[in-house]
Image 1 (cartoon, helix red, strand yellow):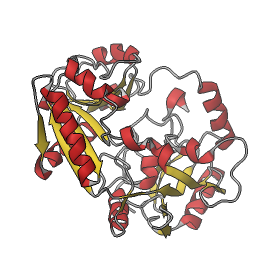
Image 2 (cartoon, helix red, strand yellow; image 1 turned 60 degrees about the vertical axis):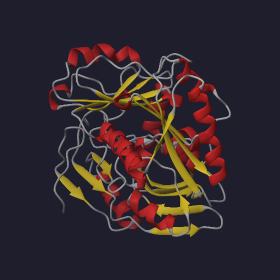
Image 3 (cartoon, one colour; image 1 turned 180 degrees about the vertical axis):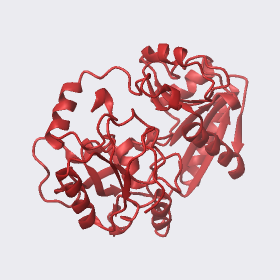
Length: 383
């Protein structure tokens, strides 16, 4: 048994690590029958996300479920168990020059199941979409220990709703993810990033966002670099043409593009990962305005930001000294807190106001988990 983990500030009594799907189902069934509250954990990279569970007896850790169930490179699909690390999946796909464009803060530790449960995303969502666009099938263990399948190579899906997409972002409150099937992509022949010196309020920034001839796979604004990093991928000639177009656009606004070498691009990636994984306060701000590219973040001293302009999302990280009252007042700016210091637990709702779809969410929770034992209270509206 490994060292016990804290889930959104709550430490469980025990941690269990099932060796396979059969043992996972057995453990969950026994916990549910005994009336013990439990939570599913993968690599533990998003344990601060959400509100503190109302109760937590046992953590069920899925990291031993790390097998490849089926891989068809020619069909561009792969099915793996939920505990597989994203980095291990990267290495496996690389053997066939394929990639799964799934962005997480820490590829070495994050697991496939955890990425699905938290609806992880990053800059490449601009080109490839969210996990809901990448996942095609799933197997889950319901809170009562029953295994259910949907999508993928299953002949018939679950009637009434799309179980596969329902699990994305459910934060382990409906079921435990046992395995998933994804569609994968060929590795681009060439990838090159450029830094364009453009402030969010500038005409150049607006031109970069609106020019349909530009087709980057990722767009990230780094305030610390005073510019936007565009990443292009594809055939070498195509990438060269895209960079030439970006350069011409920049020159028309009296500036230029800087090519980023491998080391410079890695520094940008590290900066982005740090904002996503470090800092006692971390939050995601979404723009409320249809044309706003950069969501407004609360004016907190020494906060660090990166933004995905084409997604209307800003990621912010700040230290424990950040004033809690100011952060609470910023709730009207569509903010979700992804981490907070212990002093804020119980005083700050991580999710804010429940969405209009909350009655449906509550009905689904009652259907999957009538006893309310599966990660209770951690999700939106206390689900």
